Image (cartoon, rainbow, N blue to C red; front, side):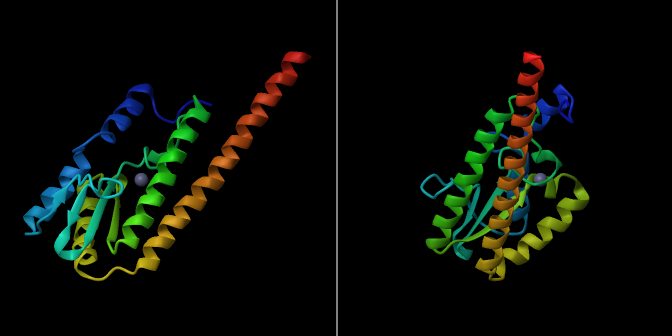
Length: 180
Ligand SMILES: [Zn+2]
């Protein structure tokens, strides 16, 4: 089975979701600024170097690329080549995000997570960003946020175990074929 995306589409997806000041982050920052909210960006002395920090609301916003942070959407699907490499890499990112979120929560920060796919077109963006304003000013239940993170983690871990199992089945089958 090949990657669901062509090579050029795959590299386009990856290029959109790595590095500092990627486009989705800029969109979110522009929106906040236009709505009169003041923030700091890429704050290095906080766990996870948050993309946006709103000190007044003690709120942190992460804008996560679906591929690198292992979202359970279509964009988070791993390439089917170098399976183990990607599982280790993305699995490590998910673990780190989870630790960062827990640390930040312990420090009393409210965390809002925006996935790249949630703002991928004007229609979705309008909906997501408008609800963002409420999430910033309203107290967000810490439990809700934790549950989302936990569900994400469990889903992905289970999925990856299945993938690994499938991968090994395939490898074993290959071995069998070769010995025949
Ligand atoms: Zn996504």
